[in-house]
Length: 294
Length: 287
Image (cartoon, rainbow over all chains, first blue to last red; front, side, top):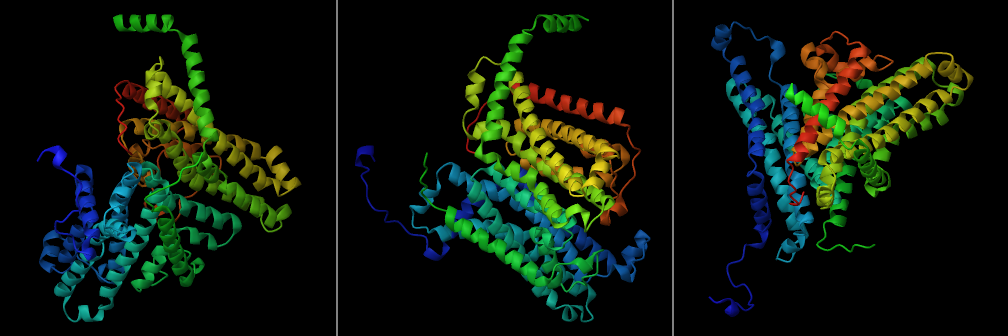
């Protein structure tokens, strides 16, 4: 068709159903992410601890393999709630690094290239855009946290039998809940910081600052002012507290100064505050237009 | 022999005065940007956060009513090693030195520098020196104020500790280590920003390495900046928690080796950055 005949007319082709429009944003974000070879390799690396865990389970339940390797697994090396808690905590941190690599670029590029208005001028709301971006992080984090956790639970139940699964049924809830808590906090916070600073490198630095610099500040706060309340600035610490509660881990395990722990309500309050501030920041900053003064 | 001769000729005939003038001009522009930019506020916050906390402590415990000098000395050593060296200066340098070139790319202004008749190596050195001066100013001032507040609130006892005891020596050591940390981390992040588009993720890997280097064999520990800096700290800090279980005690290095070692390492990294910028091509694709 000649160019002069291409006059404006309304699009009359098939429309994506309203409920699944966020999926378009997610699909394109995914394809951009996995164009990077380094990112793909790192995603693969995130599954390495899971494979080690499967091998560990197999060795523990196979006297023949133990005999061949010349080792005897004692009762101290049982697979229980503590084991799941620690493994999935490690996986959660792997997922954190994955999300740190993915999120800032995914959002700040849209801002830097003034592409957000191109998204929002289509039949796509701000919320759907946000859900589209969050779903990418949610899928990535799910793939390395609670989904392998449930598979490991099933494997352990199969290998152990004798009612192990029934006795530890609560672990299914723990695995799913802890995974989704991590996903909610990480995705909201990372998106909010990325939208706020609008520059990929600064956003990555800020995310690392919140997770590594703030705990240092919290410890300095505690040491100087002789208190324990500085830890409310330590997001990994409060998330770990909640994580242990969800997995019903003995609070004395692994904590030298467990007496100085923060109360659980303050940990939940901190996490809730972080989520609310992130949501507020997203609501304020995720706009297709911006008036620049000066 | 011929190469040595040509190097000697180059050094003799190079327009040193002209280059110095250009270097000072680049530094002036960068210093203005580093100090007066709105984006620098976060560096003020990172650097001055412990000062505010120690100030609150000084108000809370006047004349050392609820604390003692030994305990506060240990706490200051802990804050210096765990907050300033491992995190504050690290993140401060990461932000400051990464911005030197990446920031120009984001603001689409690097080509103005490249079009000016200035050698690119001079640009690297000028920007690096300006960044280093900024970092040393902020963190040096912060440590000085922290130290002054920590001992000032003890009154005459604090004064005696500083001027008649080991205090002044400790302050000098803290300042020296701060300068060395800014020199070391600065050169590392300038080079990283010229090699990688997003230098923060490799920076995170460096942070992990710098934090967990004590658990590695002593040979590998020597490849970390923190290994040298820790040895120069005036008050040693014992490792705690799980890290203490796995710590490998490495043979200490004398300050006479640690300081030049770190300076040589930083110079080598900076030379690499200078070589790298000669082949750099600008791409203003959105960061």
